[in-house]
Amino acid sequence: MTLQRIREHYEASMTQAMDERAIAAQPTEPVQPSQRVDLPRQTAAETPAAGSAPVGRRPRLLVLDGLRLGAALMVVAYHLVGDKIGVWEPSAATTFGPLHSIAKYGFLGVQLFFVISGFVICMSAWGRSVGDFFVSRVVRLYPAYWFAVLAAAAVLVAVPRGVDLKVREVVGNLTMMQEFLGIRHLDLSYWTLTVEMIFYILFAVLVARGLTYRGVVAFCAIWTIASLIVPKFGNAGLTNVVAAGYSSYFIAGIALYLIYRFGPNLLLWSIVGLSWLIAITRLPALAEARDVSLVPTVVIVTAFVLVMAAVALNLFSWVKWPWVATAGAMTYPLYLIHQTVGLAVIDRLQDHVSPWLLVTALIAALLIAAWLIHRFVERPAARWMKRQLNDSMRQLRTTR
Image (cartoon, rainbow, N blue to C red):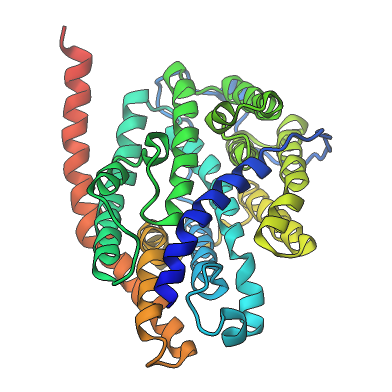
């Protein structure tokens, strides 16, 4: 029964995801708050020249690894306990009570992911060539993703009355460009990868010119303006091209990295504040679509921005536990495998195992599986791919 419901809700969920991206892209009128915090940092005048080694590189920010895992666990809780698809019987709300009411807000982990992504991508791309940026993104995204796609395909084939899977859909998903190809996602969580890819493509244009303080600030301004104006034309394709519904989160993350690297000033705080205001004005429609209350939604998103602001001000420098880096490494594989695999396990075992024991054991098993994928699939494949792609980039630069 429940797997049939999964099938019935599959296409509806994809349509809903597209609708929510459109809702999030609704135009708004920005207001700029001002806030100034004076701390000694590298100044904008010390910006390294394009292609040069970055100046004043700080140690790895382990707190970001912990935040990424927290965001992933929010999304896991949303899908497995919040359970909008309806795999639990009689319902997740009846089964888990107050925990279900909290887990319903787990979808906001995606917003945190996007803020972190803006921060981390700007940080990791500084001083790199566009070729290096391309290689770093490919080796980071594809090995674990390919494994997850094949695992999702195997589950969808093995589970009776599941989604009617076609070879074309598996092949299309392996490209990570299925949404551009008009092919459904094998796992509904994959839609966020399309948004991330759009961000990478837009940011790569800036990386090709060489990252500078002035250039990145201009990029934030231009992307903000485009995200507000483009939806006015009513063209869904162009709206998706500029990721209008979620650009404010990436832009906030980028500006917060500039604060971390060069020190705070009124302009950078204004970019963060404006991005927050734009995000907040789009939350009512999103909260309605997700059937959650607006006030907690606004509070959670605001808390994300405040925590990332604390990261930018280096208030989490005390986080030095080595295990946090391992936790961060597990985040991406966990995000990729949790939904299709997790819902299938719940469907098969909920009649035989206590729901609380099942969901606890399932999340633990998914974390272990994520670590195994990172250790034995992602790392070896990434090392090999990085060597090969670096050789390819060198040949591309030198061959006439």
